[in-house]
Length: 435
Ligand SMILES: [Zn+2]
Image (tube, rainbow, N blue to C red; front, top):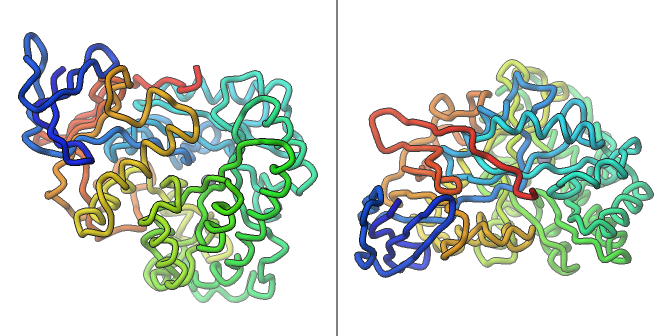
């Protein structure tokens, strides 16, 4: 395939030739001979390396009514995400070698490449788990007593030491439950679903709990030499604590674009962990994404059905979908001048590839995997939950504007084509990026 006359994130116009699953050549626009190649006329549209979303919950095994590898990966492909990393809080949890194997079998349904994280609980089996081609350990729920997989500092220290020995990164869900405001918990929620007073969820899971847990995680990992990555930092304090300690961190689109002010409309549909923060903190996190302090954007794509969300505040499950809307929202923000296309590329592709050691991913260069997204940056459209491909059928960004991909390639295979009257999807070509 020859992609003719594309504009890269840095503004250069290039032809890109793909041979098999790799990029064979990148040269000045108009300079490559098409020969027998199938030609995609980019006509000056933007060509980006496919996004690497290091934080999704595709729910299989155990919760296929919320999402499957097939539906989650379609949503990823339609949103320009070509690699996903699945978290271990499935049923059974991915805490043993056998559980890893079960998930790996299901992941064969994926249209996009994937990594599988190993989970850490008091009952995990590091001997068999660490033999498998893991992406990382995590997300490890450090000192989070309200999570099913929450652990305290001692087992966390053991896990970090094992990971350091095995050369496996550790990603941490940093909320210290001892700093939650228990006086708020379980008080009258005042309605269900969109009518619930979800601001109480944010009041309960305090902003202070984040930086404190980051500090604890950094203190434990510091002695071992383990590579530490803080998941979904939602406060400027959390980001700054991670950065000062030399840990990498990620921010989700919902913490970047939504705040407690949005909870009036969202109700339980805006309940997630960590929760939405006040507007001043949201704006401060936004600044840290724009200026490059934050390393990675990742979605924490955590779908639940409408029925599950239509409960009272204290019963509705935490989590929102996001894998399909991350790149569209970031590109729309770029279109409006909040940051450059290079920043979008770095946050979604180049940095995660560097941090998690994926040398063939995240770049448009000769010999890299042909994971590519073609998009018209000047053609935004309205985000509608019913038009997205996650099984859950809703989005916290209903009515927002996004710039969606025209074409998504995974290792040279077209997995999503939105150029015609009807969108089409390719085959389940996804592979484990660690094998
Ligand atoms: Zn998560």
